[in-house]
Amino acid sequence: AVTRRAEEASSAIVAVRPGEGKKLLVLGGNGYVGREVCRLAVARGYEVTSLSRRGENPEPDSQELSAVNWVQGDATDAGTVQALVSEADAVVHAIGLLFDANSGLTNLNLVVSGSKSTPGEDSTYDRITRLTAFNLIQAVRGKFRLPFFGSSEPTPVLFVSAAEAGWPDVSLGEQVESAAPDWLKQYLVAKRAVEAELQSAPDLIRPVIFRPSLIWSWTKFDVLPVIPIFNLANFLGVPFVDKTVTVNTLSKAIIAGLENVGTSGVQRFMEMEELEKQVA
Image (cartoon, rainbow, N blue to C red; front, side):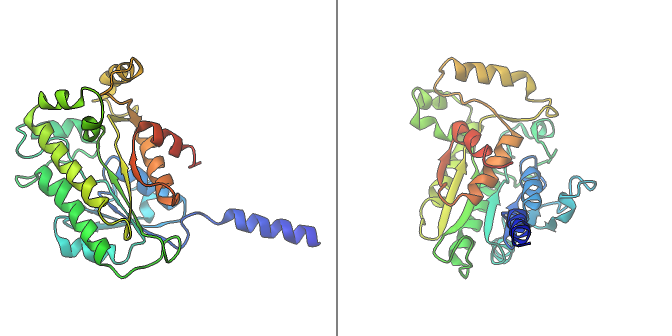
């Protein structure tokens, strides 16, 4: 009888999910990456809130996504972000766009955007990437401290950046960037500004910065033709081309980075692939 009770107690312990009792805020939760983060987080027991312009569940038939609190709002508004951050134990920033209002290529977002979002006239990299993230960072800095993994731990803030943000750190990267189109340079200016700001308050924020190259899945047909090219270039040692990652790898890496208090700083594809293994 004692052995049986011990087995039952052990089963109960195993059944406790990692996110039980914790609140996760996902900015851009109905996007291509954000929805997968929400799906995984709900399955692992987190109470998940998403903030997005549409505030709609992108997959109403999904049991996990139906459990998300879908909030419609503007992340460029500091008050909106502050109110939601005040209730969260951790935050994922998954808002972004490849072609902003100044790029001259906004119509291509309908092709390359996993959520088929269309940027407005004021949808610049500075507003959509930098301002929304800075609002988040400021809100975390100013919030009443709620423990996540213990009272002394800083708040986990996970940011989806881009592999190209690391070009200055690799051979020939600066030369490649100097020849890049202006829209890409501005895209990287915004990403790097967020990365730097995130890492400026280590006592309050545990920054986990993901730098994926192309993000893909078998249903995202716009990028499938170029995936082998990127991967071959990386395999052959081209220093400024990172191996691509699937949206499944990235979303699992984000969840692992959230749960592993020892994870912080920049995560390239190699680290993402290792982090993915931690999430069943």
